[in-house]
Amino acid sequence: MLPNQELREVQYFTARVRDDPAGERRQAAYIDALASDCQKVRRIDGRFQEKTRFEGAALDAYDTALLISGDTDLRPAIASVKRLQPEKLLFAAFPPRRYSARLVQSVDAYTRIGHDKIRNAQLPHEIVTKGGITLSRPAYWS
Image 1 (cartoon, rainbow, N blue to C red):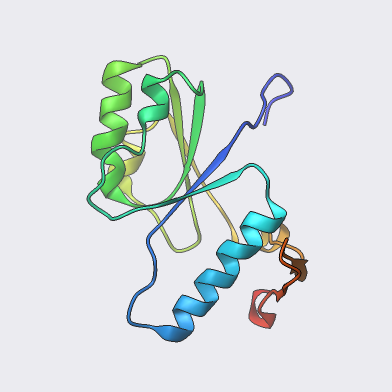
Image 2: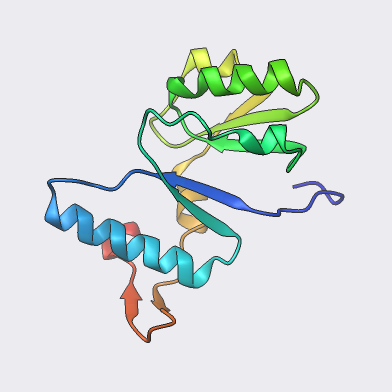
């Protein structure tokens, strides 16, 4: 982040895990931990076919967006932003083992996120929710 930039909000788009009880519990714990520890994170539950993800550009809510994804299906939304608000800067950051050459063609710049960056940006080992529940980070994340 540059000195004259301010992080106003992180939008975390997710779809709920289904048909995997252990995965559902892990996801619920992670979402609870984010809500308790990260005040600028706004979770947006959705389904894959929703197309309103970039309405912030039309509302002039940001100048620069960082998309942490390797999903090529974001290209139509990116194209809409570039068509309607060409001054908006869109950057893609690809998580480990994720990359999309087609997404690279759509954004202003891109980078790759290494495993070290992921390890250094993790939530604390334990988080206590507002309800007093202690959530522990899985050992395999360390």
